[in-house]
Image 1: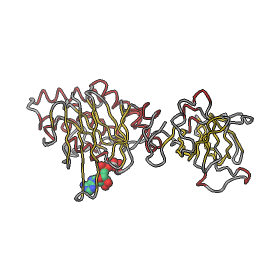
Image 2: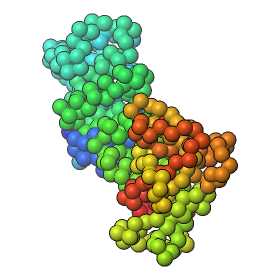
Image 3: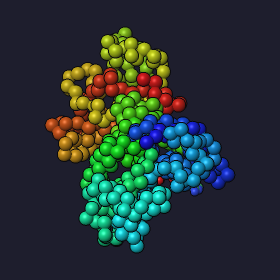
Image 4: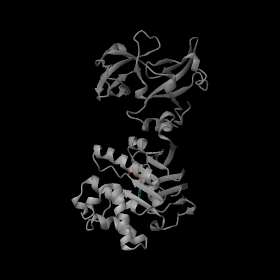
Length: 380
Ligand code: ATP
């Protein structure tokens, strides 16, 4: 086992016209499980391939434990990688597939190798498949073999590149638990790339969020959910996405108001938390973020509640997604402009308004996020 450190790691393609990974600095602790997430093309795979030694950095370095492995060949790095497409040898049996890496990288006897394969097969529950060829296996079984092949080598680091994305939703959930169990039992430092923020949140001890090759935030799932470093992270983490509204701060006799510039929001900050909002400047413009699950139906007589028009109600079983129009033109009846209906409340199924209903909603001061409109950085 070992820590993994990425120091100013950079990868350019096409003579610098594409910066896939932009001076990335990350320290991953010994035994830690870090998920790497971000939209397509943000540099996840390139980062992983540089750690694996499959891609040469333009500059910067990769340190595993106390070894600078930047110039080291992939096979000497003591890592095992699991890919989305399983990468099994089609003509070899499961036993031969799992044994192959050991034959290449160790001088164990055949008996010792087989013993290790049996141990790994037992861990993965695939002992009954050892004589099968890959094309006789289901997708889930293939991925178990690929995982078994990775653990049999007893590496210092596991690298996972979207290993579950070819599996159906149910199997994917099951395999997530399997991968976590495996990592827990073996305690091997792991880097796990996924484009699925939910997967990243449920699996990682910490999450690294990338955008355009640039690190946006690294932190525990709850930390990035509760305190997103910027508007991008706020919108990327959580489902449905965080709602954003442009607001301006008004100081009135009755206290501080966040007033929507393109919505009818007039949100009064309660006096007992004004301190927290003290950093805000009167007249200052911000982007307010509020998560759909932090929006609640309010009493219709509550003067501080926010008025909204119901555009769509989407029942998802456990909750209802209520799409709301906060544009302020409440007198005009049902809106037909879908663009305006981008404020979502995730509410209890008991709250089941009709389309076109005028409702009141509220949220807690603690759940309000504010971002700088110029930089997108979190200011609160
Ligand atoms: P995805 O989720 O779609 O797999 P990703 O986050 O893994 O994306 P990368 O595959 O690392 O992203 O790619 C990062 C950027 O580098 C992209 O703009 C991509 O087009 C570019 N890129 C990757 N490999 C090469 C290459 N061999 N030559 C040129 N550009 C490349």
